[in-house]
Image (cartoon, rainbow over all chains, first blue to last red; front, side):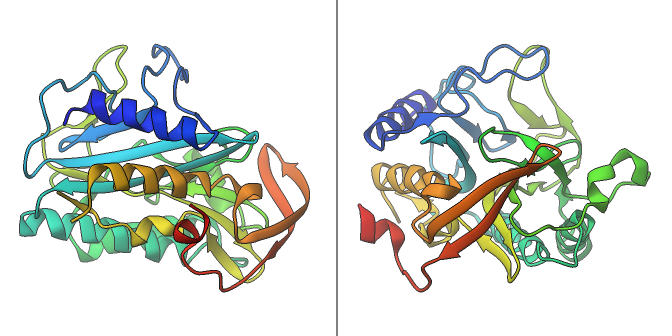
Length: 237
Length: 58
């Protein structure tokens, strides 16, 4: 199995469900148009891996972050989950479990009376405070709807200078659609990205995980629209 | 363990559910607004207790 084959299969499934990729040909900044239907990021690649960035076949123990964005009837769905080929090593399983639990704890804060800083406080407190892993800096969640990315920006960490994250003070208003996504590395909060390339890697080459849910904030609290992701086995034969 | 084909299909299907007005738990969306670019869905009405959306609809 290669990333190219997985991306081709994602394209086929999207078409069978009368959807199209929200990522294919997406442009951001000076980067070239995104070349793949899905983001396919292996091991030390945290996010934004392309179908062609890794040509070797995936092997036992590889950890794949599968991030898919769809356009369906003019609306966006955007979710990511981490899968592993074969039974994971204990340290990898622990990192994956940390990612899943951080997502749950953060989402529990997305309710009226809270701000997006409360999301970051919960996620960072668990990942870095309790588990000793590292949240990747500079990347975060976002509003979505008819566009893939819209305000608010949702940092996974509290920032040293609050004026640099104004959206953190925004109240969680019922009706708001957000895509929230902790990105966690085992050894560092730093990332590297080659010039004019999409994939983002941990700066120390350590393992990483990525989990993303679409959430509708309601008067009664968060509703996870992509909750079915949690019922999928994350160990792949 | 799951097979790749099943995992990919279910992952795409679940992501599609994030396209809110098409979510099977949302029986209606009466209006859609925005606040400084943030999408606001008003009056989302849910049909509760619908288990196994993927199994139910595929």
